[in-house]
Image (cartoon, rainbow, N blue to C red; front, side, top):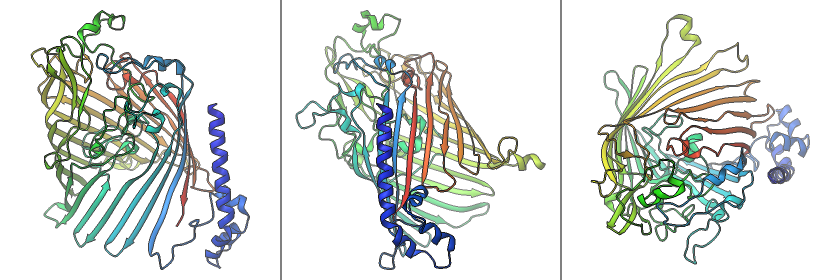
Length: 578
């Protein structure tokens, strides 16, 4: 089934590309310079060679005219097919949440199809004088999946529907205007701002929410970011002593953050809240393909059941009796819930440095036990916090030829947060939430484009080693991960190793990435092979394996996904329309 779905999508895509290429080949030939014999020969060689090349030479619709000015349209079409390594493992990812807030969804049948995502992205750029405009449109379609058929979008009549609609999009993702005049630059609109430098860990990358509803966030941090509506000025400052290329950057994010896609969950948590849903993370629904394994023991009364007979403790021992329906308290659209921050950025000799302040609310919910005894419920909230952060990177100059052969770069960043909410099993904390200052740090060593003839004569070797440490500055033995009774360590560490190279002048680009967390000896590995034909840069084929291994199947640092290892194949066509 999976093979035929992919083959059908591939044939349809080739047919569309062939039709476009056949239709526009003559006009493309007319736009080529008369003296370019090779280009003219390629343009007149027939529609099939245009298809093999990925379309005509230059933009499909021809070069932009003087009437349109500096206006360009580019994008890609992508088909992603993924298969579970062992689909029977999906039956472990079922159960009740919060002691029965809504019923379990048993997977009576599972096939091997993990994802069949069809994705189109179109970028439009227009520049005129000091103004630049950018718009990115997303079109996403995903079919119905066997292990999600029991899940429904919402409980009220106007939201009730299959969960497959959750993933489909027909929307503008990024849309911003940039104005630049002298040392002043202003970005206004829906955009992504990245202050951090990590590959897979969010340390100084504190601004944009993440979307992990259709993929594991650790496997691709870049694609998981969610744009925010914001005002984003940057002012260049004069050089001062050893401080070169200085600038100060400000960000203001209003409380109103509309979101109309990926908002309907089976528990109807987002009903009538579309004006603020874009300000928090988008997560997979309980029981969905990319959701973690639910912790089976929420309440003390559950400890007598077979699911909790293996020594697990209750996540919320503060609850007396049963629980009512879970309530969601999203940050309201008020001035008090606006997010803002400042960042200073500079260069000192060869070292890049930055420091920032960020005031915001948590992007992931923290469950609070609310209500009176025997009339209690879980309220998911997003408390406020303040961040102070620093980051920097610098080349590491080794003496002699070693420095030429091994061009190392050292990176580091750290963020102190004044009030991080952490769940606790301490009965004295009736809300099941304690607060502590935390310190999130990253130290990395990069080997950037090293000459390695023993490995490849047509490419280079790139390596990255990252150490991420999350420290609770006021730890307690009763602190646990949200929704579980798993102890939170004083220091939570992750180690990442990324190795990559290319062969045949970038035609073959293998990459190996792995993340290790000592909690349960959890490993997340994803070897990747990117294939790009030498005759065009418009087609790419990416082959990836995502594997999750470990001893703690409820561990929040990847263990909850154990059993959802998969193979993923991604075919992408990059186009240039105008």
